Length: 213
Image (cartoon, rainbow, N blue to C red):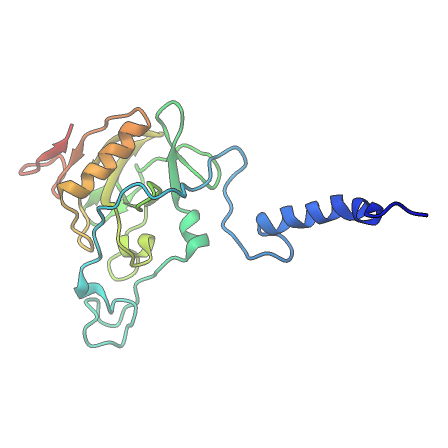
């Protein structure tokens, strides 16, 4: 006579495999954003409660027909979680900024920020995840696109050369973060062992003021 529970033992490896598939977003589980093997996943622990909401005047920017759209006739993109993950960057153990999607060194020399060439726009969420884009097109793709319209812990621009962060600025018209928000970025940099200068909205140009150096 078979021992009680013996049948369950036969199927246990299969059940474990199915559970792993669900946790990884495989068959039977919801789709989840992916990052390159060997790169860290997104931070999940809330870390920065001081956050800045998007300015209310941009509330209708996703509706090209709304009379209060600040970009008449245009529709600003808003990224979903999977699209946002494709823009996530992280600081490695040597202090270099890398793309999470493939582990390559981030570089902004070809960046097209509306505030100046050679820079990328970025936002940081309350967990310390940083999302960046070398593409910044008025009326199409903004800081609000990266943040999905949600509040941010920091926002602005990054200047990066082959992974080395030269400086950051608070240049974001959609969020206009204050020094208390850019302090979140300074803290996140410090947690990763780097201290690049962080400037106000004007950046390292005449009239600009360093917030953290």
